[in-house]
Picture 1 (tube, helix red, strand yellow):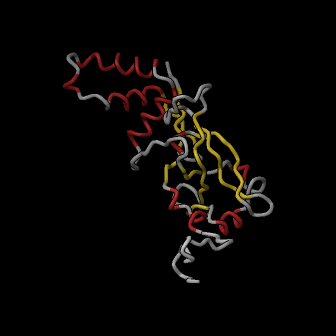
Picture 2: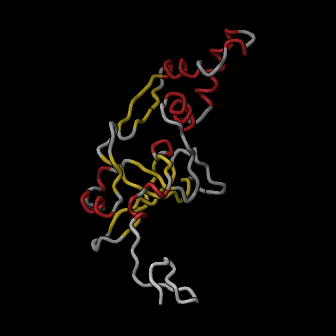
Length: 194
């Protein structure tokens, strides 16, 4: 019996046959830990049949990736490839770049966008499962007046790279609209004395 499993790599998708998947899974086990080596085939059969596809995808991804995976939490900032139909309808590249909301590209994508995790896509998101098949992310885009707006989407948690807020240029641009003074009359930044 041949099954196809989808293994996604950023915006691309690949199909792996069940026999290849079982070969990868058999590498999880130290041959010395199995009393009868012939039982390894049955162990991998059970895993490939009983573990849900999204969990198998996560296991294979984590086994083969060259990056250290950092699970997300609700409120985590992430970098990801946006849905291709969003460009032009939800955002313009030059505006995102001007706002500091466009991530530098690499060998996998020409550019990335940022977002914030709002939950997983299960019916009841309590507790949050960072390995659920998809997570909900508020993508950070712009409106017609070039103000920050959020667009919710669902993505594989494996394709949402957990990053620290301080690496998003948008948050480094501090806009000061008024001076705030301490009670002693000094500017809170210590630059103006009255």
